[in-house]
Length: 341
Image 1 (spheres, one colour):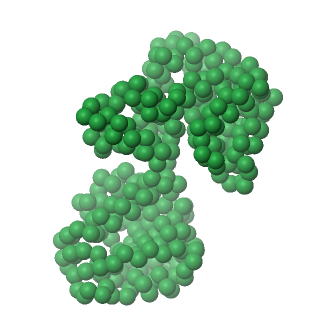
Image 2: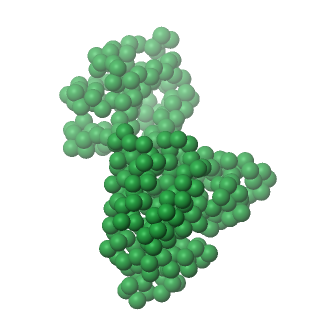
């Protein structure tokens, strides 16, 4: 199941002997582990033996330990005797899970009553028999990245988590200025909640004040410079955007809002080309009215083919920034020259 379903069901269901936590969304991975830890530190009377608390927490690195060492740790009885459960978490467990497929099936058939094992992986083979058994039992937790249409609802939920509300325009500012990285978004929402004090609702002015500058206008300026093939101006705006970033974080902070903007331009272009008006663009893309005219104007600067080509360049750069050992500034500057070619 995906993380959001797991979060809603976990407190009501019996604790399993084995959990597989996997996926690229680091925020969800951390929250899944936090939920498991917090429940095991409280009374649990759902099993045949009442569980009072965790006797010990052992955390291991799957790249630095063997499968036999992990299983030995899991099967070693807790120090404090019957009625006490231990928790073993293995990070980077991809190799152990792949190599020990038959072992994990045997483990599930006859698990130790006093231990819970959690394997943390980046990705898994969904066709694997052990994975399928875990999925059916509810022990596989897919910490996938949120889709574009899910992000706004998640922001609203996190705002409520901090005891606040948020206007739709303020939500768009967070989403479009910060991107889809949940750890960054959650940090900004926490700061906003503290900044509001006794006030209950996050307004546009609050979001803009916290961000420090309106990156959305910079993104519009950047895509406009690209559309006019003005590499000098595009590079200047890019450097202005990067001036607010920590070294090494530029690509992962700048590419998401740029990709977001190009996706909106592509969708707006299709709507307008099919005879729809500005109101349809605002409704379909949830564009704040203060950005609507800029968006419509920019669709006229690009052809459909240029938008799709530039979006492909962005995706390629995003992949390279995560897989190649390339300087982020050089990578982004190269992207500008590709755009303006």
